[in-house]
Figure 1: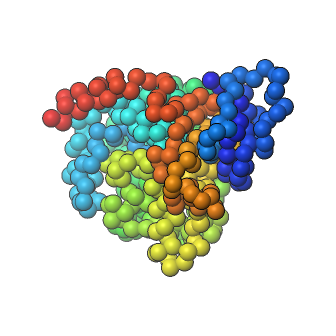
Figure 2: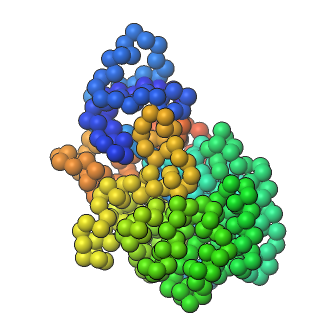
Figure 3: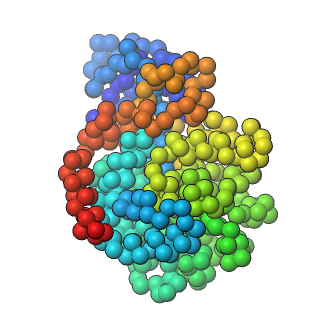
Length: 423
Ligand SMILES: [Zn+2]
């Protein structure tokens, strides 16, 4: 598609609502957004003109899943209702040891199918066999920031070398749809020297770091935020996943343009790790975004649920209904994620922005009446309202279909592979 004109459609640009308007896309970039019927196009040559005049459809900026492990699709539901340590070391790690390159590749396709169906246009990933994830992303057509999980507790085993190769081969692939960064798993899996080396490498390559910090309470005793700052990881763009146990004083260390906090409310709740102090981070002016984490700790890649939870749990937790508003939650799910991932020309619908969009069907009783469309989206909306998901002007999901892949073949291959590895 790449170029198109959509008219007769509602638009929530991320800043304002246009009750009836149009979007003109040229070569994957939004050329014009406006109010009214786009009469200027009459008599002119326009590619792919489509009117939604008789529908109640709305374009919104595509959602960003800023923390995911797309290679884990085969582990959905494994080890539920366990403690964090039991879940990670007794249930997840032994299963992960069985995953080969093909399993990770199929998982990454399955994960993108699930994300695209939920209106997600971009995601940030940490896993292994990351070359397979990049391959899956380039075929499926999503925008993604991919990192190789790194750790040196128990031996480094050339993972950083592999991450560098990944960078050389895949960074900026697909015309910049794929960015490669570095994924030190956590301060308890990585030595300080190793973190220093990773930070230096990422900085030199103008890349980024993706790390889990203070996910569980135990980590408070394991390391300080000061010593992490000394390694330099916060001097390069750094996606800090979780940040559940970070005190006010430590937030000041993290209060830099380079640091982005990724909130994963479902994962933190399901593993009983607690509730991250997201309103406090936001009050400091630190960018916050949303992530689903993996299907082994969620167990969906449904960003709508994360958006709803982020708008609900802090109100209850702090007994204050104003701490995260519906538009705050929406912004975390879109623009906040786009900024964390470093895709500066995404996250909003506006001239010059990439056409990364989700199309929502508002023709449903749960959207009536439209007293407040943003409130409707966050509190009443659900992922099944998504009818189309577009990345740079190309549909990756449209009316139940995935234009770029053979869904039935993927499901068949996934079942066979699961049988082979786990049954
Ligand atoms: Zn994670």
